[in-house]
Image 1 (cartoon, helix red, strand yellow):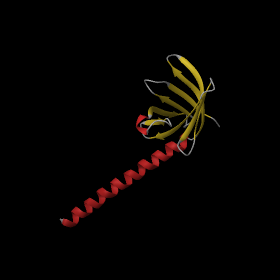
Image 2: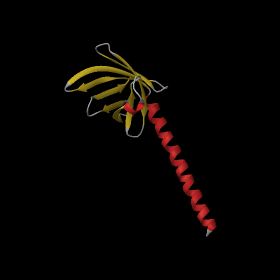
Image 3: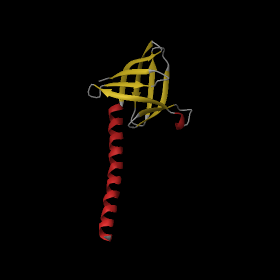
Image 4: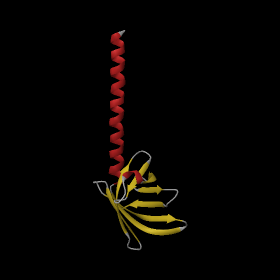
Length: 124
C-alpha cells in the first residue's frame, strides 16, 4: 500500500513538472511568433490611424504612428493577454490586449475594449 502511494505521488509530481514546462514552451513559441515588425491600423471610436509596431527579443517594443508619435514599452505575452507595460509605470498597470494570430501567424489582431483595436500584418 505504501509503495503504491509513493508511486502515485511521483506520477503527480511529474505531471505537475511537465505541465509547467509545456506552459513555458508555449509562451516562448508565442513570443517567437510575435517578434518582428508589424504594420497596420489602430481603430478607436471609428478613427483609423496607420501604425508600425516592432517587438524585440528583449521584451521591448516600439510603436510609431502617422503623426510621428513614437512610444517605447515593454511587453509580456501569456495565453490570454499581450501586456504592454509603459516605462514609467509598474507592471501592475500593464495594458492587456487580447490577441489573435491568423493567416499562419502573419496577421495579428489586438483588442482592448476600453482603448482600441489593432489590425496588423507582419512585415517580411
